[in-house]
Amino acid sequence: MAAGLRFDTHEVFNQSPPFETIDLFAGDVPLVEAVRANGGAAETAALSAFGRHWGSAAIGALGRQANDNPPRLHAFDAKGFRRDAVEFHPAYHRLMAESIAAGLHASTWTETGHHAPAPSEVLRAARFYIAAQVETGHLCPITMTRAALAALAAEPALLGKIAPKVLSRGYDPTFRPWWQKSGVTLGMGMTEKQGGTDVRANTTTATPDGDGYSLVGHKWFLSAPMSDAFLVLAQAPGGLSCFLLPRFRPDGSVNALRLQRLKDKLGNRSNASSEVEFADAFAWRVGAEGAGIRTILQMVQLTRLDCAIASAGLMRMALAQAVHHCRHRSVFGKPLIDQPVMRAVLADMALDLEGAVALLLRLCRAFDRAADDAREAAYARLLTPATKYWICKTAPAFVYEAMECLGGNGYVEESMLPRLYREAPVNAIWEGSGNVMCLDVLRALKGEPEADVAAELTREIGIALPRSTGADFDEANARQLVGKLALMASAQALKASAPQAVSEAFIRTRLMHPHGALYGTAALDALATQLVLQRVLPET
Image 1 (spheres, one colour):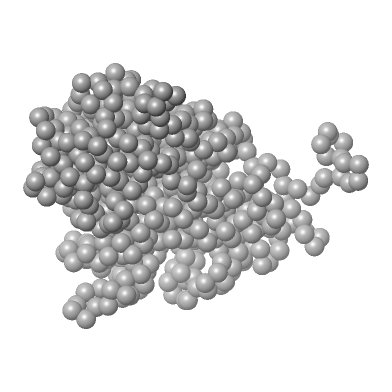
Image 2: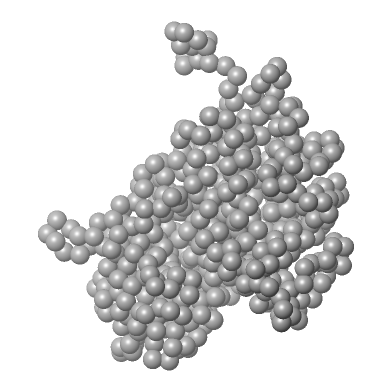
């Protein structure tokens, strides 16, 4: 008997083995097929190498350590001088270095700051999805760094200066001026205490000051406060404007960012989020005065996409853990995976994840082609908020259901499931709540190309969307409309990437017949059940 399996009173048996040392790409059939269907087949070997690396026990341990040892704020040094520095565990820095080396922060951009050729978004999304399965907190500065370049395009001279540092594959966590570093990360701060989502209510002021502006005010949430610079919104003489605020002033002195405290968050423990005051802090304007929202939305469109990818990654890891456990755990004389009610639950969950992955990679293909294809650009504008709404709102209940599949073992901290569960709600809140996403979809549907995208979905799937326009349209029904739009787009994406039995089961159980409020209530036949369960984790 191996050491650790026998106690004085009993033996340890009927427990699932650790879910580690796996290929998080090749072992995920829906992901492999969605990448192939959206132009990424040539990178299969590289993605599999990435999946094996991130599926290793060593990388998994970094995720646990980074969350067990959250960041700490050091506002002052021993002599009483302002320090305003955040200290992270070494595991967090290792994860940052791994993601940056893999290009998760910049692989969709060229050296000149332009969008990289297709399928850069698809390939980057596959890697981001895999990394999110292991640890999502560190991906906050990763996604903001990637997305910030889209906003900085409004200020070409500034972009030209900072882009080479952003595009570097070297992670440099030292606290020094950005131009002295081998690589930099970028953060963002938009919301204030009195406004939240309503950024037009921001009171932070920006006064012209030499080659830049002087900012006075605060931000209620400043994500990743140890980033080298931040995109922020402030009221300039010409109206609400976008600014890049560096941690160090051009003369090399520390900029006047006063970190008040770190947020004590439900999840996202490895990542620091802070409250901050700007006491005549130096910043460069990005875009024209008064164009702040239009400028920052170039960034937000990309961060919203990553919110959806990360949520799907949480769902994937939770489901994989559940299926793995149920294959190795016997109850009432046979494996859990063979118990009819459990099979129904797992297959129902797997079908939602199939739709989410297919939709995400199809959406990323639209981002890849948007610059040269007006219809793809319209698809991205319409489906980004709809996708974020559906996937991010689905994730918490999905992860909870997976936790229950593991029983009491899934509820204790030695399991990964509590961390996934705490992490799941945040992406529905960040970058625009569910209601904000629904209102964005309604606005997009007023555009002719976006309305044409919705009409094509209706024709292809054969199911009509609820009416979304007209003077008497009730915004209270927006969630019903947007949820159905996302499901129809998922069905369309599945028809292009998954077996016919999967897409037909999705359409039948998600669109043609009412689905129960809980997983395990879809009327899936035995063939569809067996197929989707085998695709979650192929048995070898």
